[in-house]
Length: 199
Ligand code: SF4
Image (cartoon, rainbow, N blue to C red; front, side):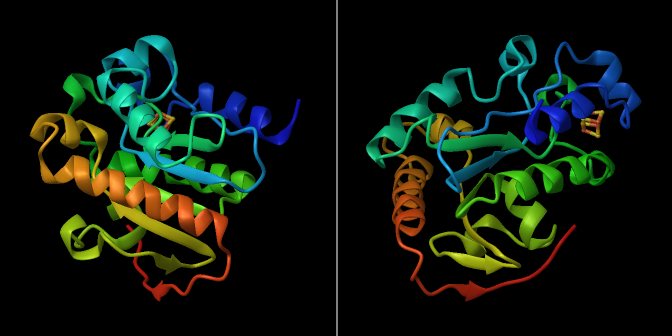
């Protein structure tokens, strides 16, 4: 068993959030790519369909994400997809600060293994995981940030892109930001803005 699978096996038995462990169908560990040091996408938490399937982004938001990834020259074989929380919050509510803190070591361990060239944070929760809870997505999106050893591209969650429709700002921004991430992933020489902040 390799290190990713060893970690996944540990995550699948986690019950640090007893209420989530009791209500979940599956722990959604995430998907790792086939390519070395690729792009890692970080979402918020599993929804109902992801909880049932045990995989991230399998619902309508995931289908839209696949389309936008393809337009960016990326696909599910070239990106890792993980979430801040591995278990579904009931009613798809936003994760609590306590839940995010409890689950943080799992995502840190995943990033250690994945060693991504660029990270895309999808939505406010994943963006706050890197930038701190006080930072708004609108303040940081549209640029590449250097946080520690990671290049981070903050952008909208695909569910926001669905909610605002094909002509809405989130879809255009998500498309633009995924293309930027693909470019950064292909070019190690890009300059980055220095940022800091953690939960
Ligand atoms: S959300 Fe994370 S920390 Fe909480 S029970 Fe699930 S895997 Fe464990």
